[in-house]
Length: 192
Image (cartoon, rainbow, N blue to C red):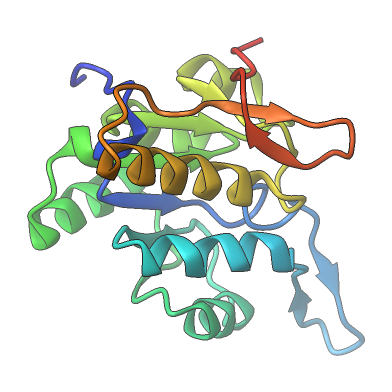
């Protein structure tokens, strides 16, 4: 396992799971048996801002879903891998393809299948309602559960860190939950 990078300003690639990270993990079935997913627009806005800031974003999911394909296209995510059994192998190939070091990769996960890629990443995040094994593998825990702004909080952290580094700041601003429920620079919520 590579040494953990605690400086979010150095992240070049953010890898996302879908079910439980970009969604709340619940699956809705339509009348014809189709699987429906609900995505948070705040997460989407954060992803767009992160891409604009120069950080690549990828999706690596164990399930295959046309809704994910559509959402990724809408957000401008070019690296989408679905129906993946071995997420770590896909991550390693992607890192090689993009010429990104594992230490410059961040990952957001929520469950046991995400743990190997979380351990391989330089900075691992678990959503607030993640499985205990994912929480144990995380460097940081988001203040929000999956599908409810968790991805946005990580995007905001990475963007603020990059902006701080560009201004010559030494430390990346951590996250704080304001009374309004919004994430703003401040103390990071530690692992549970």
